[in-house]
Structure formats: C-alpha cells, structure tokens
Image (tube, rainbow, N blue to C red; front, side, top):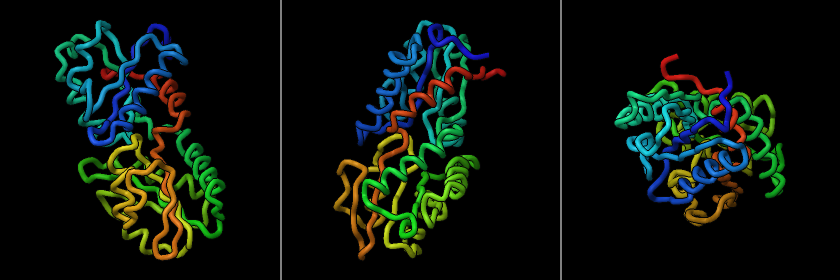
Length: 260
C-alpha cells in the first residue's frame, strides 16, 4: 500500500564525495524538493562519504518508521550490502521499521530520461545520429553480481530507441573498460554518458583523464573536447537531472519493509 507522504519519513542514501562537494549538494537539493514540493513530512539525506553518515542518520530521528531510497545506479554492492550493514550500526535501528526501495538507477523511467538527455546533447553540440557513437559508462565492480545490471539494461533499452548509430557499454572497474571501448570507435563524434548518480570525482575528473582529455577536467558539464580529430561530448551525472526527484518520490511512496 502506498505511503502517505505527509506522514512519511524518507532517508535519501547516496555515496557522496569528499572531493567534489557538488555531488552531495545535488542529493541535498533532491531531499529539499521532495519535502517542499512533493509534500513528504521529513526527508534526510545521508552519505557514505559525507555527513550525516549511514551509521548515524537514524539516530538523529525521533520517528519509528523510515523509507530508505538508495540513490545509486544499481541494486548492487552499495545498495544491498554496504547501506543495510551501516544503517544497522545506528543504536535505534533494532527498534525501527526500515523500508528499502529499489535503487533509483533501476527505475523504468531511467532509460527514456537518458534517451531524452542524449538527444538534447546532440542538438546542443550539433551532432548527427549517423556520425555519433554513444558510450554509457558505469562504475562496475566484481564485489556484487548485480552492480552492473542496471547499466547493461540501460544500454539494451537505448539500443531499441536508436538514439545513435553506435551504442556501447563501458565500465571503470570491470570489462569492457572505457579506454578499450573508446579506442575501437569508428564514428567521428562521441557522447560519453556517465551513468552515475552524483557528479563525483569519477565523473568530473576520472572519465576525461582516462580518455586523455585533461582540458575538460574540472569544467562544468556538459563539456566538449577533441582528441585525434574526434569530437567528444561529456554529459553530467544522470542524478543531477531535476526529473530524478519525481522518480525518488515514486519509489518512496511504494517502499517495502526490510522484513517483508
């Protein structure tokens, strides 16, 4: 049964970043909008890297029930292992009813949203579908089998939409590696889409550096660069899109108990 927002308390749990404050600021903004525009009674952002941490956020509340929305790209290592483990460190955890939703990145509205963003980028930077390759980059990890599932599913859906002539999957921490995929491209134009929730170090610095494009490190995204005659456009993290607040609200309203 859907939860009444006015009576509900939402914990928006994100990885966060100590290097890039903008990553945490985006999550705080979604939390603010969820409370002020979508009518949730209490919304608290919490971070693996930032404050309040997963291990202390529940102890800052006086309620007995919360809905935790994992602001992650996948129902993988952080959403299913790290987050529940560290929330359980709160002293009040055993006395609380904690509902967990699926990770934000696994929501069915994500593929159409990404398709829309890529089309907007192509229009903004005057890219043609026939001459453009799209690389969707996820973090990836071998620590959990489902960590790459959302990124793989997203790529399959985008191929059905046909936004670009080539659509490729790449990861930072597992095959296929970003550099390997980029070297194999045959199109003169490329959109690099980071399937990350936050504008973290990986998005703002790691991605362009790994492709040898130091000139866009630290700039505002979306950004454009050129390497060996190839035009490359980097988008910002999907988690910064305003529509994400609506997706979070939808997930929160249908959260399930950890005991269910």
